[in-house]
Image 1: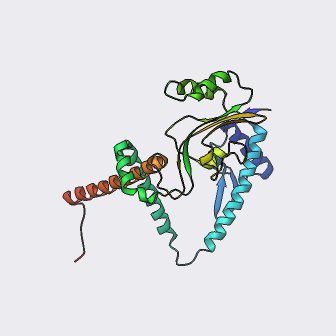
Image 2: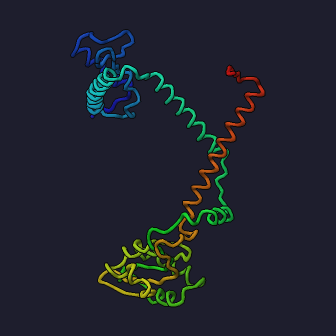
Image 3: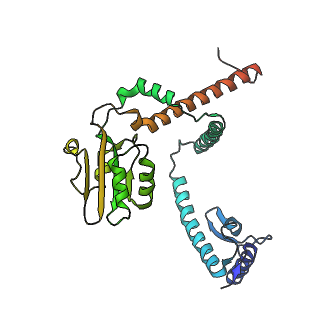
Length: 286
């Protein structure tokens, strides 16, 4: 199948259209008129850039024809929508307002990327938590735990069992390396808070529930496919105050959002004061 560049495709399509339709729709620049709906026109130049280099000729002609059909339908819908507009709707004002909003939002984004300090310290997080922790009651029980879900035929399980018997700073690194290599699911981060349901979903049904978790603080069990290791470190029940570690990411986003608002408000004020000094603002109110 022959491959074409855009210029070759343009020439081919213009020629083919001329043979099929005579000279109707051509102009001196060879920008073929492909379709017209009421007073709106679609010309071949509108399709430039749609075709990567090396597009097959047959595929390109199919793409053009499909585009024309889609354009006709969209244009008919737009024309009908324009006729149905309420007479008191100021579309030009809506467009101006929308454009202004886009320009302003883009500039604010640039300012934030250039000027916003995105570092949130632990001291800031702790201060935020102490001021707002009463707002963060748990909707469900959460826990900190060690957990491993291991294929039953995984190698070197004797080593894992020795490490699991005494989990500490010395045994955690080799245990984590082992789990990254063989486990299908694990949590060995002591400070990580997790919903009970998230752990229970990785265990055989009914193994761990809200009702039995206090009596199942530590266990190892197997089924036909996997071996499971679980050790509870700490439990928080629903309606208790969420620990900082559980809401830390949420708190960080809130702090950054407030910082962003303050940055943009300060920029508005700086621009206002500068314009006043330069006498670029005139007031015409009493």
